[in-house]
Image (cartoon, rainbow, N blue to C red):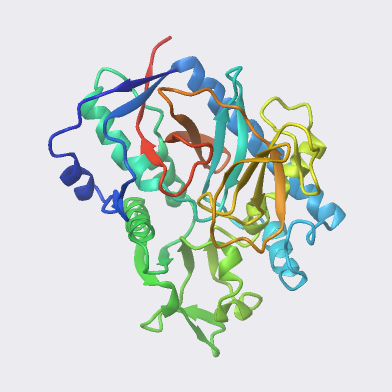
Length: 375
């Protein structure tokens, strides 16, 4: 793999805004890197795809382990929500997509950093912005990006007729993701309605969630994580409703980073897994501590022995922490890349990359395009 620099397209800001990315400049920080791309070889992509699909299987086994041994509390799941999550999993509630985040270690081995199985972002940058960048800047190469086709096909065969796409209308990235998904759903031949999350109501007579027009919500695709959803006033009706949620409640368990420690307990010989503990880690070596339901690089502490290497603030400081061995990643022109592999169902279907000059990938870390060349 190599990192290559490019001249920016003269009208690139207008182009990506027209493609749905209006948040490329937030708080004075640019979130899209127009001037570089990572060029990977086909065999590197094949290995990344194979690794992600193996990890997907291991996660399913870890979920079964939690259910079999009732490890809900250890995973940060409150007792009152256990029946909903268990029933959702045992019903086989349909799941659409998620994103594994990997880092490359100094030997070139991909290492799992975490899983984003619920309300994952960077969909617009991965599926649309980098695709158009590659077609313009590197038309002679390809890109691992089958995300749109896979999402359209999954919705098409889902058996669902009408989807309400719900989000909290506060952040432009979240709104842009909701609008993109609504377009994908319509492309699949389904009806899609955009819905602010606070507009969801409850019809006592029909025992169903309804929108602002009192129309029953058959299926709700949400860009809002379950650890927040379960604290919303309408969550008390989840036990009674027949509404299908995408992602479904059982994915909340997958969101718990405690599963990273369970994966290490169950499969310590897998080359893509890092040592990880939800109790105190060994004192020697470099360790990354992060909240079990943290997002966007908030409240992460990296230390070597007693020395703090980097630390971030955020909204999740009161959560239980897990401690994962740090993957020492090679630098590319002073930048550390992260590999976000998108899953649709059990298939790895595309790659979105971010990079940072620090040790932590955060919400403002730059999204960067990639391209694939033949070996």
